[in-house]
Amino acid sequence: MADFAVVLTYKDVFGYSSPHEIIDLLKGISPETLLLTLGKTSASLLAGTNSLQIFNSYTSSYTNHHFRTEILKIDFRLRSNSHNVLFNEKSNFHFLKMVVENYAFLNEHTLEDDSEILEINFFRVYLLINQAIYDSNNSNFLKGIPAEHFLEFAQILMMKKTIVEQQETDFFSDFLKIKAQLHYFFLEDNELLNQFYKLHGITNPDLWIFEIFRILTLANNYNNNAFYVEDDHWIADYCDGILVNKIIGKTPVNDIELKLNSLYKKDSKYYVLNWSNFGQHLFYKITYQLYELYKKKYDSQLKFDAYKSLISDKVSEKIVFRKAVERSFGRKGTFISYGCESFLGFPDCYLRYNNFVCIFEFKDNELSREFLSNESYQFAKTFIDDRFILNTANGKEKRKGISQLVKVIESLNENIQKVDPILLSKYKKTSVEIVPILVVSESMFSQPAVESYLTKEFTKIKPSNTDFRNINDLVMVNVSTLIHYFLNAEKPDFLPILKIYLDKKKRLTAKGMVPDFPSIDNIPYRKIEKAKQLVEMARELPICDIDLDEQLRKVRETRNK
Image (cartoon, rainbow, N blue to C red; front, side, top):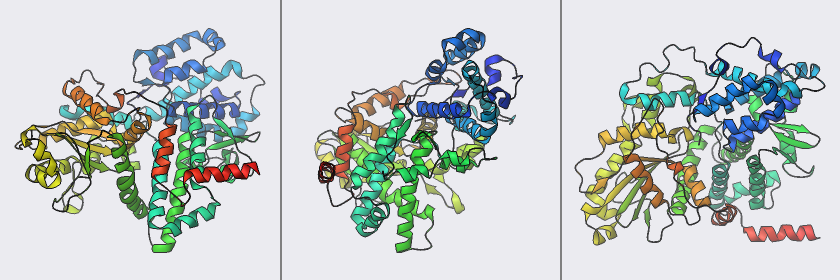
C-alpha cells in the first residue's frame, strides 16, 4: 500500500530554480544507462525501498566528494521528515518517457565516460521532474476544506497527486485474483476455459501461472531487474511483443503506448522498466482474453466494463474476498456466514468468535482519471461519499459502505437469533461486541486518512440504542492486506491484530499538520515463507482436471526422456 508522501522538488532542496534545462543535464549520459537505472528504481519502489535508501545506493564516493554540498542538501531533506520522498512512480514514468523520446539525441551525445555526471545529474533531473509534476498552479489547493476534515483531506488530496492511474499493483493479490478467475470458469464453464488454454498452448495450467508469478517476483530482487527466457519458452513471444525498443526515438510517445511496452531487450535479456505496468498488462491480457471468449459465447454486445462487474461479483467477492477472510480468521470455533434467507440486507460476511462479532462489507471500487486529476476538496469528498456512505445518482439514495453497516447493525439487533442461534444460547445479547469492517480492493481507499474520515462519519450515524455491549470504531482493511497476512502468518489468526488495532484507534490523538493516522498494516506478527501457502492455495482453487502434483509428475517425466 502506498504511503502518504511529500515529494521533494528542486526548489525545495536548493532554494532556487535550476539554471539548466533538463535535456542539457541529460546530455552526455548514456540513454541505455538511464533506462536501466529507471527500471531499477521502479523495482526498488515496488519492493518498498524508501527514497533515502535508493539515494544512498546510487551515490558513489566520487559524487559524494565532488558534489558534496548538493548531496548533503538532498540527504538532509530526506532525513528531516519521514514523509519526504525523492523517488516516486509518477516521476519515474515521466523521466522514462523523456528518455525514450530523446533516445537518439542522447545516444549521439553520450560521453565516452559518463560516470562523473551520471549520478548528480540523475538526481538533479529527478528533482526538476518532481517540480514540473507536483508544483500546483492551483492557488486554491487545500483551501475550502472545513476544519473538521482538514487533516484527513489535506493528506488525501496530496496523496492522490503521487498516484499514477492504474499504477498500484500487488503481485500476490493479482496472482490470487487471476487464479480465482480461472477457478470460476473451471467450475462454471470448463469448455470456455479449455478454449483459453488451447489458444495459448497451455498443458499444465498451474505450472503456467506459477511461472508467471516467478518472473514477476524477480522485482523483489531489485539489484537484478532482468530475466532471460529461452527462445522456445511460451512467454518469449509475449515479451518480444511489449518491447520499448520498438518505440525508442518516437516523438511524442503516447502514455498508454509506453505503459504497454515495459520491457527493454539487450543481449537476449529482458530488462523490466516498470514492474507494475509489466505485471498489470500480463494479468490484464489474461482477463481480456477470457472476456473475449465469454463475449463470443454468450453476448456479442457485452462491454468490457460489464464483464468486469460480473467478475467483481462472482470472483472478487465470492471467491477472493471470502477466501481471504476464511484463511485469515483461522481460529478454531469461528463461525462464518455469507447469507440468511430470513435476513434482509445481510452483510457480505458475518463472522463470530465467542461473543466478538465482525460484520464485513466488501467494496471492489476503482479510481477514476478525474478523481486523480481533480484537486477540489468537494470533488474528492463526493467521490468517496458516493462509494462509502450514500450514493445519490439519478435522484435516488442508495446506502453504501458505512451506511450499509449501520443498517446491518440495526437489523442484527432485532434478528441476530435468526443469523446465529448458537450465540444467544451461550451469551447474553448485552455482552456481544460488534466490529464493523469495510474491506476494499483499491489501495487509495485503505489509506489511513480515508479511514479516519469515514470513521468520523460512521461515529455520527452508528446506532446508539442497540442492546449490544459495544459497537466499535470502523475498521478499513485492504483485501491485499488479508491475502499477505494469511500467506505470511505462522498461524493465521487476524482477531488479535484486529483487537490491537481497535485499541490503537481509541488512543489516537492526531498531532501536527501531517498526523500519522494508525494503519492496520503496521501491526506486527510472526511470519514464515509464502511458498507453502501459495501451493496450498493452488490446491484449494483448481483450474483444470489434473491436480498440481500430477502436472509436476508429467513435467519431470518429459524432462527425463
